[in-house]
Length: 407
Image 1 (cartoon, rainbow, N blue to C red):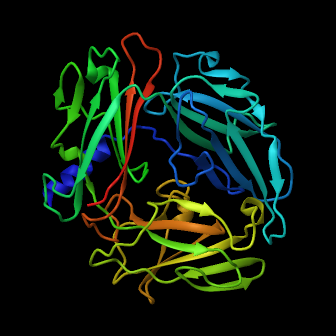
Image 2: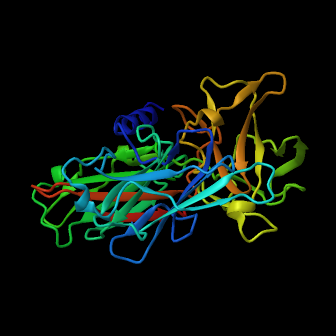
């Protein structure tokens, strides 16, 4: 047990002051999505020079027109703004432009306006690899962003090889998974890899659970490698729960009942229980997809519904419990914090969500999930390699690997 605690604490210490997060700062802004080539299941990474497109979309909960302005920043590997670049270095065209693509919802009880922004577009083209942050402002208030959307552009000049195993340095096929990886320099001239190369390893895109800038334990003239590192041992977790809300008139997958209490629809999920054993259940590692049974234009014809989550527990836990998925506003979204019902021995949370398919899990702040840890769990691991050569002015994103485990 002491070894496990040491590992988790070490990972926490490696977290940077900032991390990649797409967030809404307003209760009026909902369903923020950052997608690649209109595929909601892919992480927000595109390759430099390829005909790929990032789409940022969100809903504002009214039919009132808002003139929204977007501002693009290039960021360092740690997501602080890059200071060594001029705007013209990373952007061709114009910054601070209005979002011109918007539509009002149609035939929905909750009125909303759906806004869409794509890159590249007629006004803006991005020129460099690395991290990008897009902030959205009201035209009359350029000091207070309403949301931020973040994505990455990769120029794959370094190679990444990786394995994930349930045979870890602290247990054998029990409750953890260990990542081993190497980064080949390719044609890049690397003089001091510890200073010039920065790496990130994350599980299921969770911003609170990632390893940053771990020094390699093997290095030579062609590559660096990270082997038998306790810092790269992750809680294996469990498969995500899921539900599907396609029709507000009848329950869908994992929904116990649907109700209309004016002026909102309510969907109550079947109660979840902490797992004692691993049972495979195909999931999408926290993703969500907006869709319905009846319409082709789901973006403007999907309803908003209060979704009620229930987690049964023998007693209240020592730390707060949160519902989490890639759809929540960060790993510990206050709107997703659960409350304890002593008489029912249950945790409850109600979250206002748009119709669709959702993965979710329960997080206990600062600790493992109450859903348990099983080495067989299918997880998504993303490994990133940033490179700033001596004299360089910005962090290039030169390596990207997405690996889904199957143990």
